[in-house]
Image (cartoon, rainbow, N blue to C red; front, side, top):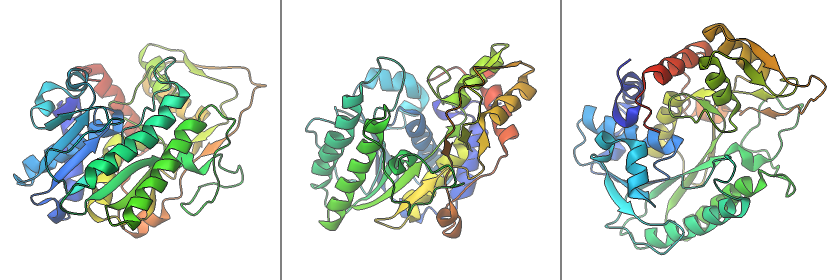
Length: 350
C-alpha cells in the first residue's frame, strides 16, 4: 500500500479523482476555504482537493485552511500536504478576516472528540454557534457569493425511531436536551439555521451534508467510536470488546467514498438543501465485531448480555442516489481489510 498526501492511501485518493473527474469544472480557478481541516473528515477533504488539483490539471485551484494552531495542524496533516495549502491561522470563534475572497467553503470546524477532557459540552455548542457566526462575518466581505458546504450530522434528527430502518432528510425529529451528546447535535442544528439565514440575506449559498458513521484511515481508534475500538482490539490480538448485547445498529461508509461524496456535493449540491451522507446498510454491532474477528483472528468478548441499549443510526440516502452524489464502492469486508492494512504500514500522521 502506497502512502500519499496526508498519510492517506494514495490509491484511495486516486479513487476520489476517478469519481469526480468530468465534474470539476466548478473548481477552475476556485479558491476553497476548509475549516476543521485537521480533523478526520477535513484531512480527507483537503488531501482529495490537492490530489484533484495535481491530477486533473487545475493549477488555479487554491486550497486555504483555517487552523487555530499551525504547529499541531501541520503535524496532523503531514509536511507534504501542508506545503500544498494556503494557511490562515486564527481561532474560528474570534474575529478574523480572509486574505482574499473565496468561492467555496467546506465548514467542518466543530469539536467532536468524545475523549474524556478533550472538549466539554458547552465548548462544543459554543464553537458551533460562534464559529459559524465568525465565518459568516468573514464571508460577508467576499466580493462573490460563496458556496458553503456545511459538515453537519445525522445527530440533528435526534434518536432514530426503532421502527424506522433508515432516517430521511425530511424527518422532523430533534435531540433531547437531557442527553450527553445533545450539545453537539444542537450545535449542528444551530449552525444550519445560521447558514440558512445568511443564505436568505444573499451572503452565501449554503448546503448541508448530514454525516453519519464512517470507517477508514484517519478515524481515531482510541475514542468512543465503536468500529475504531473494534479495529484497535483486533490488531492488538484481541479480544474485541463489545459493550452490552451488541444489538445497537450502525452502518459505516468507507472514508474514500465519504471524500468523493463530499466533493460532488461541494460542486453540484443544491443550495439550501440537506443531504444524508453515509451507508444505508445497517447491521448490529455484533456483525461488525464478528467481521473484525474474521479478518484478524481475534476473539470477541461481549459485555453484560442483560444490558441492551438498542438504537439505530442509519441514513436514507435515496436523495443523494437520485441526484448522483452517493458513492459506495467497497463492501464492509474490503473496507475494513484495507483500513487494517493501512494501520499496519501507516506513518501514523494523525
